[in-house]
Every structure is written in C-alpha cells, then in structure tokens.
Image (tube, rainbow, N blue to C red; front, side):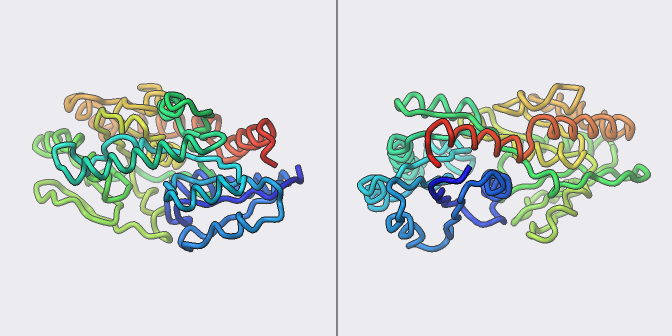
Length: 339
C-alpha cells in the first residue's frame, strides 16, 4: 500500500499514555502495510511546516487529540491538507479537576469547546475512541469513525504466577489529573480497612494522594518502571464519576489491567461496561457497597483472581490489540483515499 505520505502529529511522546496506545503502537503495522508514516515532533512549535511544504498534492495529516490554534488550522486548510482528527477524550465536558462553579473554569471549558468544534468541523473525518465521542462529532455535522483504544501486547507481559501474597495489592495507575476519581473507591477501601481485611493500596502516579488513614503505597510513575509497577498489582481498579468527561474515556487503564492478567473492578461508566462482563472477565461496581463486595471477593480468593485475570487477558487478545486497530485505520485510509 504505497501512496502519499501520511503525516502524524501526536499529542506527546511514548511517555504519554494516549499517544503510546493510539499512535506509536500502531506505526509498525501501518509501515509494514506500506504506509509512508512521517511522525512529527510533538514538542516543536514549527512541526507542521513540513506538511505545508510537502510535495504531495494533497497531503494527509492525522492530529492526535491536539486543538490547533486558528493560525495553524487556517494555514493547513488553505493549503489543502486533509485533516484527520483522532479524539479519545470528551474535551467538550468538564474534567474532574474543573467545576462550572468557578468562572475561570467556565471560560477555559468554553474556549476548549470552541477549538474542539473547529477542529472536528475542519477535519475530513474524526476518529473517535468510542461511540459517545462519535455522537458528539455527528451532532456537529461531521463525519466520524470509531476505532477503540488498543494495546501492543508485547508491552504488557502477563503477571508471573506466584504464591498468593499474605497482603494483596490493590492498585491504580494514572496521572494526577485523574486522582479525584479515587474518591469513588475510597469509602470501600476505608470499610475494608476498618474490618481488618488485609490489603495495600498502590498508587502509580506523578503525585501521591493525601490519604493518611489508609495503607497507601505511592510509586512514582516512570517510563522505565511503570510496567513492573503494574505487574505488582493483584487487583486493579478504575473508578469513575458518572459524567460526560468519564463517558468519553476509552478504557485504557482498564485494558492495561486486563492485558497484564490482573483482575479489575471498574465503574460501569462509558466503555467500561462494554469491556467488562461482570463476574466473567472483571467486575463492575457503582455504589460503595458494590465496590467493597467486589474487592473483598477478589482479596480473599486467589483462585478467583487468577481465573478473572486470565479471562481479562483473553478479552484484550481477542478484541483490543494494536494490530486490530491498525487494520481498522488501514481500512479507513483506503476508504477515504488518504494514502
């Protein structure tokens, strides 16, 4: 499939979770299929200049979750560049660290919504991580396709079999902007702690939660250490609020647990309910009592942890691998004549 060059502007480098899953993991498969992928520096303010200078008559540029300013967007459109916008977050909603009660946050979200709408409407197609985001693009009259977030399984070796630990580790991995979600699971952890159920809560992040009342183990996230930290978990959790920002999430954290063979408990919000079959390959918990019950079942039953973890790994192998996502991208590129 040799054709026109395909430029890609990622949100960040491979330390950025969404870029790692939605760009860098797919590149080997696209290049093997003959696509001339040219990845631009995510940190160079003039990174888009080569696209404008391209010898291709109508170059194609995939923009991964970046809201270009009006200057660059207008220059690209005037030059005839075909834009493909990749979106895996509900930028039109309030993030967990934002509140409509704060004027500064209202202004910030309003500006983000304007830029997002312009990006979607300027793009030939918006590739969305889930149907909720695609519905937003459709409401703007834009063309949208759904390609879920997938993982390069080679980067997720399974947790090695080992004797059950005396004190199991419940874990969460993510960025500090998502720490507010841990308040969803905190009452259940507190209840388990009061009842004397042994566990350690491991948080792999760039900032530790301030929870002096609970047995929290903070592990700083590093590019070289996150994988080993993930495999140290015996149970993974993905708590979410039930709001539009959470409904726009694409299950990356949950898929990381499942790919590693770690049984997971997640809020039944957005794609989590599509990924998890409750009691088969994971557990879904809404109310605090449900979180407590699901976590306790897994904490006291090593055989259940192993069975659920194995089923979770199979789920990723069957539905959420990078080669599957790359095949969907190739089909879209062919269909739209982008290469």
